Image (cartoon, rainbow, N blue to C red; front, side, top):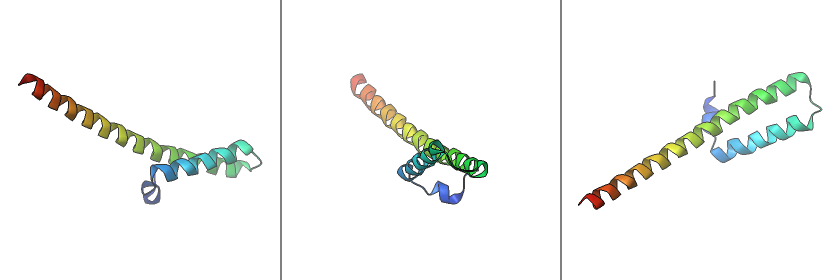
Length: 77
């Protein structure tokens, strides 16, 4: 479950932290415990990013639908 702190992150903040988590995991040299904690944090950050992107997609779809509706009304008159 995503924490309230994570929900307050902007897309850019979550993305940047996720990039750092991936970098650290790819670099290796961490204990299994630390690697698991990093992986779990990465999963949470990915969820935050996904929610932001889904919200942006919904806003774009709504704007396009509204524009299409307005165009249909103009063309129908």
